[in-house]
Picture (cartoon, one colour):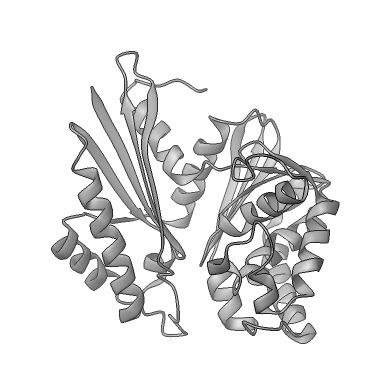
Length: 312
């Protein structure tokens, strides 16, 4: 009996998943941990990981490292994404992580992050043609899928945390601020020639901010388990309505919205603006939500490399 685990060190959160690989070579998740570390907080134009953010992250990684030791025959992979990818003090941070937690962190390029997102989605959802959109804390990955194949992918260096810090007040969002944010993101989309191939396709939404849309909507529909959103479908008209409602509120009121984490309330407008902009850019009429992305993609990559797994 073997185990495989993945640490996903993102810009806003750190996550650990561990699976047991059974005798039939099938994975069964046995541990899932999440810590909100906001590693990219206050990186600023100099793109430097700050001491407070590093301290939060090290504490979370130490807890992950301790938890992982309980599982025998464990292959553990640890990936860092946008915040560490963009950091000027990246190498010093990785050395510090190794010295204090024993974990070896691999910094992956945005294109690899997009590929892992694709593997996590295509192996767990019956998609045929779609645009996968993963909005993280400091990057947004876009993947065009046609006939279940990855055709194009790109990683944009903007996400919920850095867009919020650059453009928006944490309390009340002013119209000019929102206009400037939308203009900036739309300009980025205009530079991606292949996005036109995604016109009218559904958007498969990943990332904490995007998933918040589904959690809010499921609360409004009074569904039993609003956290269980994998495969959940939503009309983009409903997404637009939630976005408008959130824009109407100050920070204190956003913290009271059912389904919206208080920890995310200060960055939710910056986090949702990319997907709302994309809805209009593609004239898409529906969203499909995925709880599976990088970590599950790494799992399927591992299984395929070891000729253990098959597409679900």
